[in-house]
Picture 1 (cartoon, rainbow, N blue to C red):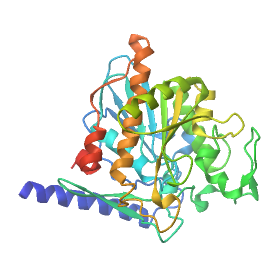
Picture 2 (picture 1 turned 60 degrees about the horizontal axis):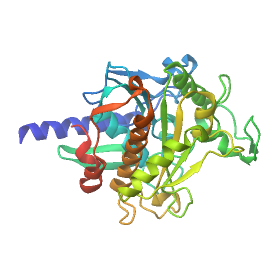
Picture 3 (picture 1 turned 60 degrees about the vertical axis):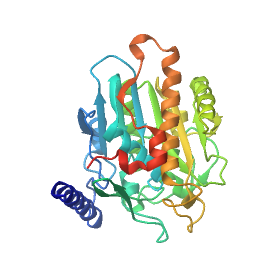
Picture 4 (picture 1 turned 90 degrees about the vertical axis):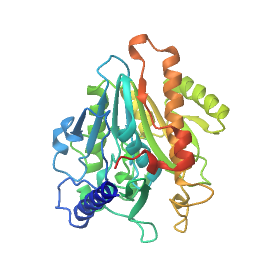
Length: 350
């Protein structure tokens, strides 16, 4: 009983630290908002600015968790929080940081890849924080916004945003949408510099497989979908078949040839990585009355399970046809079936 009390007290203390960081962040300084507690598999915690130093000290700098098995294999990159209100992707990434242990290859995870987007919410009708109960007490995670905070961007939104590679002109706020500005610019806006830093990491670390975890409104055609760069569409197709056999129905779509700036398109085109985006249905993405956590039809646990199952299925497909020294294997990996059954709290550290 005493040990449980001490663990709960420690969890409350860490939450308070996060709240204070959010409540009064110093202008232009990176903050830590998410309560992430690295597991035994993590061998190093870095900052994204290590791959692009001008990002250091900005509100976009964010932690990078590396789990290196020490045995040759594939390097896998997973990003949550591209849109900081897509909470299932964030918590899937956190669960991997806290429980995954690779036995071959490397796992690189950024749970809140747009930290600036985590510092604010676009509506008062969605939660600022969410509570996840664990066997050792509650954990709290920031529910943020879709876009980089306009205060941090460094320049006003344009009347219309058009990607440098061309394509349809979008509303001006899309200039602050990380998933519209890849590959970014080293001397651009904060969002463009963030995208450039991510691309630098993918190239420098020679990432083989890259995942961007998202959510969409339940009525959106993107809900329950895997979007794959055309060069690795075959891996996604094998994964979709495997998921169907497990009772998980995921649609499949290749990256558009004309819609530039998206992670799966630009990551795959500009690096050697096989690039994927995974979407699950978040009720709050379609209406401010939707509950992003406790919706009975689209429960958070089920959405996290879908992310984890999709990642696992794609990695299994990768292993079927890769050279022996490019396999990715795990001694421990969060069991998506158990996550769906008992919730993600059981897979978070005390």
